Image (cartoon, rainbow, N blue to C red):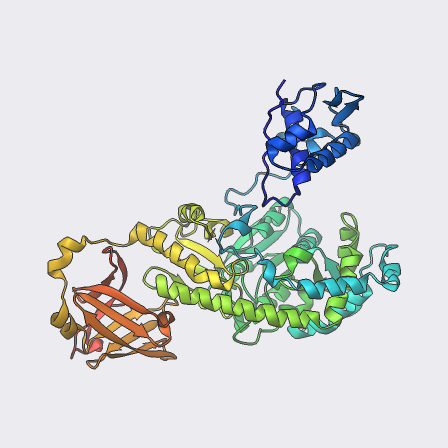
Length: 615
């Protein structure tokens, strides 16, 4: 019998030291390190071994006695219970300790079908990673702790408790329904009666209820490709036939492939996961086709609150023909993971049937949470929070684009979506996003490979970067680490010693750069022109309408070229060794790695005469 079993203690663990000691003893009992009927180490010896106070061990032992793991014998100490059976619970349920699984063949008994082959697995301790660029993971600083605490306090007043504590059958909190239909829905152009709104456990449950209502194994359900993997699985669970409708830069393609569909699931405002917006003409075409074929549209209004740069288009539910639309949304994409409060808006008959279906599983979302959410809205905290988080996320998203443009301009491109909290990134050809994600994780960077969002084959160089989980001040450093990984895989590298004879220096380099024009592309895929003037100044213009402009200065020291913009590239001084050949300039860092490149137009030449030389 061992008495020197290991009880690992972690000062960063969410459990107290007392609970960690208790957990360690339980594990020792379950694993056999402390045999049934054997004597437990004395509190004094265990405390000395672990470096904790004796009271910490005594309190842990008292709890283990109360639970039935240990028993006391007068003048003999504490012993492991002979039957090792804690009172009121199984050994495998205590402190996350698992007992031995029975031989029941659970896998073959499941009726849920095979799991999807590609899934996004986020580490449970993702918050410990310095650069978690996974969209939907929420940085705690975004949550309105003080405002929600006040809303909860108001909802716990005696009058309010009497309104919800006794239950209301399957009815939702009328105060929350009123706040949603008068304050949130009108912003999306929707005007609904109280009997046309149902509270759900997040957006996802609203979509699931709609599919349960309108789809079965005979139904053709249209989903977006790429799209929300969980929606595909919901439809598969119903054994419905699936049509994966392609999405391009203007949203879901509306064509004859929609014919025969009974249910069409679409994210028109900010497509998940690419962030594109369904074009107005496609919205109208979708509603017309739905009416023509008597299809039901399930509108997932994902990130409806994150249209930063232009007003959101109205919801499909608000448009002519919107009576065929079942609308699903939540209070906020930032609040949803914590609160899990969403809502469905539809015809009153649909809501009544959805309420009946919801009752079979949960009756209703917690009424205490519903009342707190109602006060959160009525007190103005919702508007205040949306303004604050919108400002923070807009800054983060801009910082992400700036960092990508600075470190990976040559290698990646992003789609210029008008809002949202993420970017859909087209990586270099030949770089596998899934293997890149695995290697990036080892360096503290979490990214999301795009293959999980496709049913069919997908480009292996696509990945997604989000900003909801990473603070503003870490974004640049995280992209710098990711850029280093990508360059290691694809950037050409030159031996500085062998390259020295081909590099220009001093007057030769200065003569080559003075009056030259450099042509490249931004990370958005837009043209960028840089004019290097003989007096050492430089002018930069980016965008198809030259809408982004900056100025700065350049100079030469030996074989090294220096530049500093007023605003671009963080306004910092950068230095490179230029390799000019075959109409291009490659910028080499001190290790001889090509970190960027551009089309080189010599002094006096006309850029329009370059022919096929493209940036």
